[in-house]
Structures are given as structure tokens and as C-alpha cells.
Image 1 (cartoon, rainbow, N blue to C red):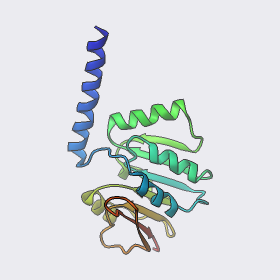
Image 2: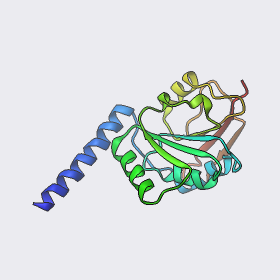
Image 3: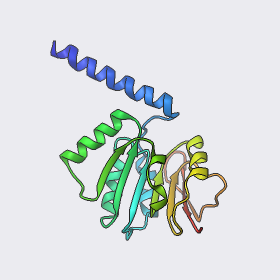
Length: 174
């Protein structure tokens, strides 16, 4: 009986992730170590404001951001239930003082107040981000793989991975 319950939970979790992947247009894929390293290096370590990870998935990168920026308030935002629940549970078990996870649409968050935005999204989400988000002047956006349409990055670094994945850093001037 216990095996059937466990199997049911696993199947439900997998179906939830699959449904969210179809609905959102992308699944919760962890960032590779090489890309993660580049992204973290591009985040100002002395950031003391608010850092958002848009699409924080399972929470590993948000936790790395919290360590990189100990004086910042790091917010991981994830729409998919299962990855968000995993990240939130891990945060309860091994809390980072400056980190919290939010489940939902990141466009509902006050991104205009962000000092740093970090993401590994897909083309459609990057297009929406380019038109719907206007962070404060001086704010930084770091994006893995996908560029921000209509904006010129201040820096582009290629990760030392199989794909030489580009990581873009933008600074908002207006």
C-alpha cells in the first residue's frame, strides 16, 4: 500500500512538472556549472539591494546568489509548483537568511525596484521581459543563453561549456 502511495505522489509530481512546462513554454532546467560560474561572476558581489532570480526552478542558483550577495535580499520566483515546493522545503531545512522563494508569475513582483535581475528564460519570455519590465537606473540584468531584444549588453561572456553558452549583462540607464 505504501508503495502505491509513493508511486502516486511521484507520478503526480512528474505530471505537474510536465503540465507547467507545457503551460510556461519551458521546463525547470538547472543551469550548467560553467554557465552558473560566469553568471555569478557578473553579479556585483557588493550588491546590497534586491536580487531577483526569474524562474528559479529548484532553487540551486538562487542559493548561490544568496551566498554571493550576503548583504542583498534574494528572491527566487518560480511558477511551477513542484520545483518551487522543493526549493521552499530546502530553504526551511537549510535556511539562508537573505533568501526567500515566491511561487507565481514574476511579472507580478515589483521588478522595477530590483538592483539585479538574473534569468535563464526562453525567447518569448525575454521578449516579454524587454517590453514589460523597467528596472530603476543602474539596475543590472544578467541572462543566460537568450538576449534581451532591443537592448545592447554591456558585456557578453561565453561560458566554457560544450555550447560556449553566451551570458549577457545589461545595465539599465533610464
